[in-house]
Image (cartoon, rainbow, N blue to C red):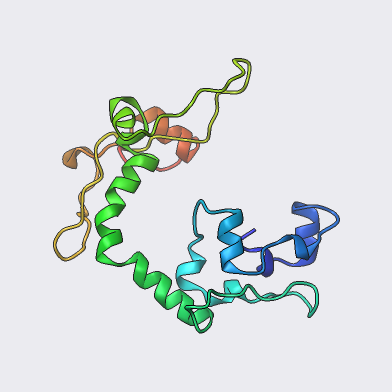
Length: 177
């Protein structure tokens, strides 16, 4: 839904559905995040073109930015400034631990109230799409806001082989090669 304005109609009809109805997609950032609040795509931090519709007039309008932004470029500037703020820099290691790391499973997940609820139907597939990449807490940024570059076993920051292979695909790069 995030990039629907940037994809040609033939692609949308092939991938999304044969009868593509543009009005079924959010027209404002507020509605977009109400509909799908999980994440923001990288383009919302660096590419104002993501707001512009490539479709003919009347097919799909540009995505409207919030009232606090004067336009797509201003939205990108303010959104990126928020992402790079000291508050986010400080909170980011905890988010990484909850989403990909040590607080995803085991006692740390229980303490963080981040435990997956098992399916009600025991016959339901167990694959959830959640993969634990890191077995140690993510290091915080230093006083300058820089994250330590040393990653891997020497820093106590590793990925177990099974998770790495599953995540990267057979033959893909892993952090603890």
